[in-house]
Length: 270
Image (cartoon, rainbow, N blue to C red; front, side, top):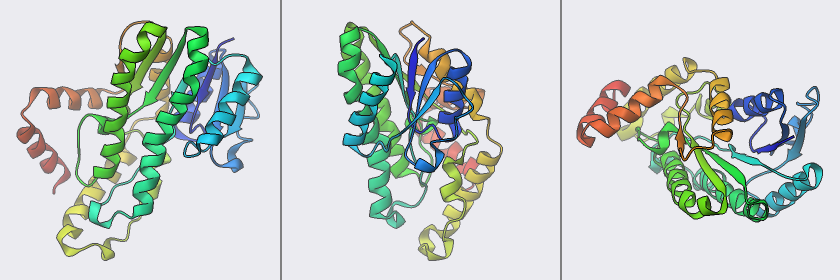
């Protein structure tokens, strides 16, 4: 039985990924940073929950070691844990900026680095990094979040060359507007505390964002894409789930940046 380790498995894409792999007969190590969720998979015979905050390098090493001892081998790791933020940069707190960088970038780098010796020893393994549509195109008031996801795209693309000769595959899954609770932290923001220069434009952007989130697609679709990537022996690097995301990528590759920016500004009404 193959084993997959999924970070950020307590909800959204991570949760659906853990359930899907388990339904396909995989042994699943579902990791999460909140101990309150450790018992959520008790009804699933082949899902084991582990405590892991990807911001803690020592916890990453201990968790991966524990999974290897319990399972014997890890075949696939899904770096899914991440947080979202949207704000004018000027109003973004230092704590939030640090949290995004430590979780979305350093967490992926340190988790990947820790698993590499195990994968090298077995001359096999697949790393699936969950990026975002925000990793290849940009939208207003997401500069910090874009920084983190563009970093994952570059990290993964470079790592692909580095690890392919070792029999280790690197894949990137790029969700679009998926309906998960990653957006819950930005549902209610203190608009009255924003400088007037940002207030009206950001409020319009926020309304556009939340409307798209509420009408987003199910995270089960992304779980299916991750499962497909895990079982794909081709040289393909990037995977997307929905037509809208693929359409946005196509337009961005086809149009001059100035035209694409004009469309984004018009769509978000800013």
